[in-house]
Amino acid sequence: MSKYEPLWKYLKENNKGTYKLSYEEINNILKFDIDHSFLTYKRELKEYGYEVEKISIKEKTVVFHKI
Image (cartoon, rainbow, N blue to C red):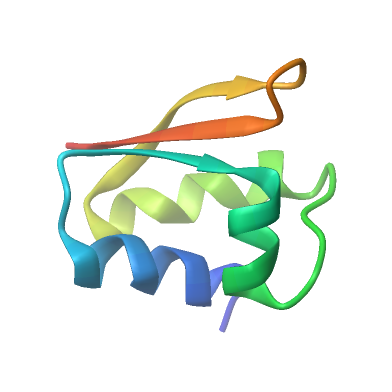
């Protein structure tokens, strides 16, 4: 089980076309702060029907898109 699985399940269960989540919202879902390892783990997201569309360091957001 991936440490990011709670986030992947959250996206899949809520089944929106697009999500724009702040780092804070993601941290609340995961119960830990996201870090650079997110870039490696984001590949797992395709198994849940989503992909990372954009990561904004400036805005501190991540946009997820249903595939």
